[in-house]
Image 1: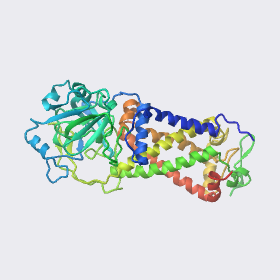
Image 2: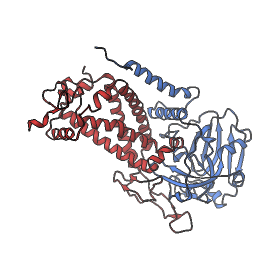
Image 3: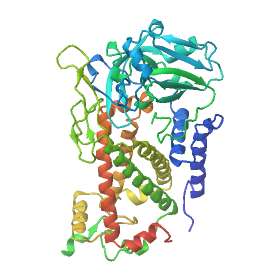
Image 4: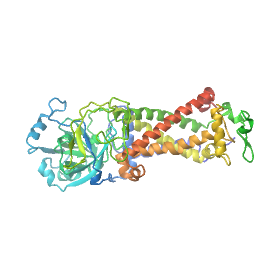
Length: 247
Length: 269
């Protein structure tokens, strides 16, 4: 008996595969982060490609009112001057003793004018203040007001080269996170030196931390040391954590 | 059993003649190949989502309402599902502002249970399988008339009386109460419709409302679910309801003839 169907099974499978192929297509021209043969990392890359293809480019994360500001736990490294902690940093400890007077953020790699920016120099850029929600991978959220300079402004000042594809942020506590150009030049991606109207407190990453509002909290590294712009993805091995966490 | 109650006349045929209706015999149930394939992909995705979802919940077993929620704010409720439950490993709090009731900060001193590295990646990988297969199933279901013919209650079929009857039959362990041309009984249809058109879309949408990138693009998600933490709480309850459905579904499969039901959903022709 002939079944009356508008879509046959074969057509359904073909159209399904075509849809998936269509989602993958925008990523084919570019090299994606390595997967190490791990199916979980393949899924992460699929999410990255799909979100870049399907979501409008530079939409803004929701910004809140002063009255929405909430309590905010400090997790991960909360004091790099703590000698008993594995993330102890002697260099950061020295800067902290000097109230970060001779601290500097080095911007290097694929930029025309590599330079170390002092805290005062960063604060002399036009600033941006935003009240946003921090989404931790653990499951909690917190709202705070951040003040800083958009990463894009600093990169433009340093003369970022047109071949650049990734921006890598190295921190004094040993962490490193990397974002692509879309997130790096997002207006809400800032180098924050102020939190809730005061200098950024030590547990939250003094003197300057990164804020990447369209990804999960762990991309927003604290205790910044240097920024390295690269053409290629810097392969640090499989950390066991997704590189892209816009979710 | 009272004979009168198991027959209903819907205008042109007798419904609920349980023992005499040929399609009520699980031996005769036929599922279309696309139903079988999507059924099992969705089953596997759902199991992986439940496992990884529980791992993720174990990392922060506190649920909240609104946009912000963390260890320094009050929870709706807490679940004793890991060593993170009420761990209390916090330094003294410091206030952000010099005023009463100011939000505070505190540094965590406790080494929490956290397997989210693989937990979250597995969750989103299986979510892709569920969403893509689910969408293909929905398209096929609409275009082939599967939903209309098999799942949507026929004219006169859906009434308080017939729901009550089917319920009574279930309590009497008379399960395959198939109606009309459909393979499914009335309660079964209502349950499947709720799962397909309410619970699964709800769990997917509340899941996406926890994503910073997706809510930046579609801020209405935060509005309709009352915030990111409310979405997480609704996500938890919707998942819980789906797990209850899965348990009942498996119990019904076993009680209505496990071997035959498994055959008809797999190799049976």
